[in-house]
Image 1 (cartoon, helix red, strand yellow):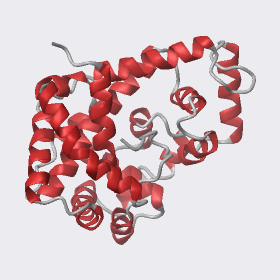
Image 2 (cartoon, one colour):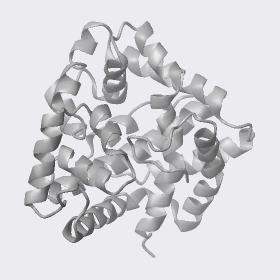
Image 3 (cartoon, rainbow, N blue to C red):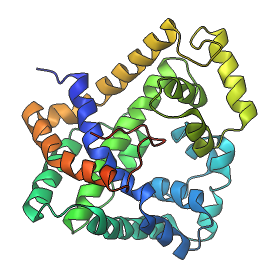
Length: 286
């Protein structure tokens, strides 16, 4: 039986906080600064895109289309003048392992190994057609330690889902900025948090809002219209559907077991303030 979109979404909600430690724990940002990278966002884009090599701003903006191109261009390709993608990747993996060892609850080695093995099995089901970030992260050599393996597997799975979301948004005829506005209109992420972290100016945000009002997707108070709500639900369902292959590979029982094992980790990260909720990703407390 094919996995339901709900199962794919629950799977993502359970493992996303593990991946997101790379953004919210201090160790990865400190490691990026130690390499000479300037500012948090240079470390973010260099770290997230390092498996692709010395990527330039236009390609990075296409892959990370929720962000304003100007924000991306302030980070790349300048980052590669200070260090190499290989050094960024190696340093990031080490920093994330250090962070996870500090912030995860004491669940025991067997718990972590079981979860990691399940996620690595799910990764085997990830197709790479049209999914550059997932493909790049899939090619990263597996770390020796279980925490590094856990983070890498959760990263491949979330980038596979994220690449699918980009496909779904493009198919729906929205830009990355417009998709962000409809996301904020659901109430899951505050408008200002999304606008500021993604680097859009007030002028860009307002122009996109007016376009969505003209299309009948937002009302004049920036709330989703009936058509906008339908489009947003269809977009989320499409994202879930495009994330189904690793779920199929693992099987429904395997996914439920992975969710069972990952949920206490994710809740600990949220409840202890490591991962804030709400957050710009839109990840909830599972």
